[in-house]
Image 1 (cartoon, rainbow, N blue to C red):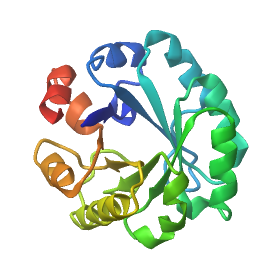
Image 2 (cartoon, rainbow, N blue to C red):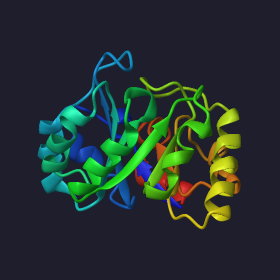
Image 3 (cartoon, helix red, strand yellow):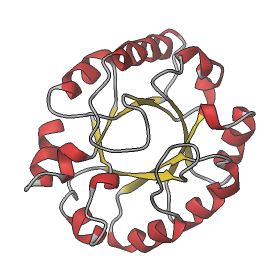
Length: 210
């Protein structure tokens, strides 16, 4: 299981210190919000660029924004290793997938709680990951939606049936209990924010998820 602490719940007054506390995690999940696609605003490429020298962890950048194509290259240039965009935010997913791959990084597609797996099914053979949102995107600290487990199971069945290699990631309401449901359903990556960073010992929380 890959653990990706979400810096959305970290201390924005000292992000480098927050990152230092989760160095035992393989990835860092970076939520980018524009106040349009979701009702919140977070960080841009300059913050990602500023964080990059502090760690060699994989930067898993999640673009919860309208017109993601416009900003992809900036986030790649800033140091992102993986770019995930929302299927609901784009008219031609295949074109954007190809473009992101041409920049030399891994590409993922995310689906909101009300979006069916069928929406991403045509692109699964060319994706590196699918991110299942188990809360409504926009804010941290929300409760896990159990219907997301069914989506994880469905993706895992398609992956096995068609001998595909994309990773299944889950984001929202992840803790020691909900992570078990995700693991049993076939998830490979757990994105956890509040559970990790709202603790006195974030590294211990990462290990508990592992």
